[in-house]
Image 1 (spheres, one colour):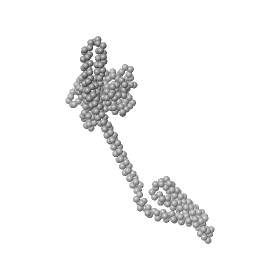
Image 2 (cartoon, helix red, strand yellow):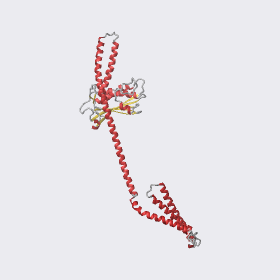
Image 3 (cartoon, helix red, strand yellow):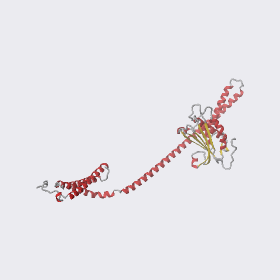
Image 4 (cartoon, helix red, strand yellow):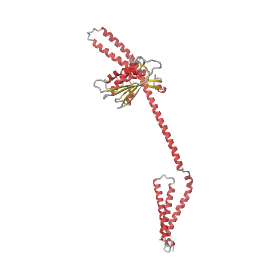
Length: 411
């Protein structure tokens, strides 16, 4: 007889006297254990296939093989209850022993490395610390971006002020020299006009030349206003009363024949105090702004003028030449017109810049307002949104304490 001859061998069921209860107990127990082992093995293999980054994956695979072999031995425990196939059962147990021995030997060198692995709590704490660092980094980046944006905005404002100063100096010099030449031309024209007889056919040419000289003189005054070289007559006056007095004139300007209706609203601020400026130039500035607002509202709309008290701090004043820190009165002129794009706003105060059709504007309206406000030691600010409207804010210095405002509406 050899080990391959199992005919004389007795099945395990014989040892149990073929007792149905004992047979059922062994079969059910071994079946459950075998299924559990198979399920664990399959689960470990699926885990390795889906997570190839598992640390020490090879040892997990070895355990899967070991558990699979253990489950097979329990299957053979059921098989040998009726069939004495002890050789195959022994081979399976031998394979299981080999795998278990390899796993047991391989585990000990891995223990120091496994101990060094961070625990779930340590990983959670590390993730929290990393999250805080990321949030701090994002806060720093956001603050840096904001600071960079503010610096770029300040630099852009400074470049704009410097450009306007350079244009103003150039414009003022040219306008001054041109005005001198214009005085010579006009003086000679007036002298010639005085020597001509009333019926002289040459008189009409002289009158046309004088009319052109008058228009050129007006243009020169506008250029000088932008360059802040015009002669101002500043005095203390009640700005609310002054604006209220010119309301009818503004309504007449807005209500052009055939034009869409435009409503004028005036909201005077309370206890804003008198201002120190040239009242006539203020009226001219408001008239210019009203005309621009009317042209921006071809379909009608609303023009609002409001006054309020405002304080400019030292850091704000530093960004505006000739402007001191202290109390100011802000005149806000708001329309519901077409608005301006950022590109148009950037060049709005430059002389001869206009978006109106040829013959509809000289491009000196806003530049004249700009020159008047800056020459009055104030500030002008522009805000606009396309399709919504435009707000022009004139900040004029408030009169010193103790000064009484002049009679409103008089020069």
